[in-house]
Amino acid sequence: MLAKTYIDQMGREVRLTSPPRRIVSLVPSQTEFLLDVGAPIVGRTKFCIHPNEIVENIPIVGGTKKFHFQKIKELNPDLIVGNKEENYKYGIEKLEEEYPVWMSDIFTLDDAFGMMTAIGSLCDLEDRAKAIVRECKEAVEKVKGSKSGKVIYLIWNKPWMAAGKNTFIDHFLTHLGYENLITEERYPELTTEQIINLNPDKILFSSEPFPFKEKHLAEAKAFCPNAESLMVDGELHSWYGSRLRYWNK
Image (tube, rainbow, N blue to C red; front, side, top):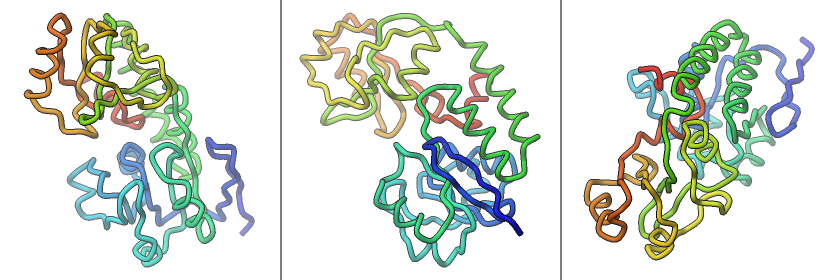
């Protein structure tokens, strides 16, 4: 059978002779989407936790930044799905030597919708993928401009780290109506003094990847008393797959 060529979001060619039947997914949000459309996942990372009633029966092949290559080999995948930011270059390049690897590269909602549409196509599950994309678009449109204020979105403690420009989180904060005070790119470290000097209206504490607790909100309230400290759902703000539908729930 002639191979069909697909172009992933990094502009790479990915060739498949038939729709994949044994997929290893290396990105939590994409794993959830693949399972939601009914794609055949045979391997996932330890961070791929949704839908939990399904993933618990799927073998773990390591983390997003450290793959167990032998475990992946034993699963005999015919497609691996990854992401430029969440996975590590060496690991992806090593996998490319043996398997077709489709990579996403996501900064905006349109990128997220494009990823879902493209993966649906290469898995021969276009109709299901398009239905989920419609749901996601409707859900995020309902919350567009629903928030306000100058914010800092924290993702880590000791050191403090925040989401900056050139990230999906920054794009989504703007979509919601917030003004992100972090103008540096990616995920810069911040001192307590820098947070104070930025004078945010709100400090948003993401539920992941760092497990913030109420004590962290109290700490911020002590050194930045004029800012409202809020715990927010990190999955809703940073997962760019079918979890976007949950903004409508």
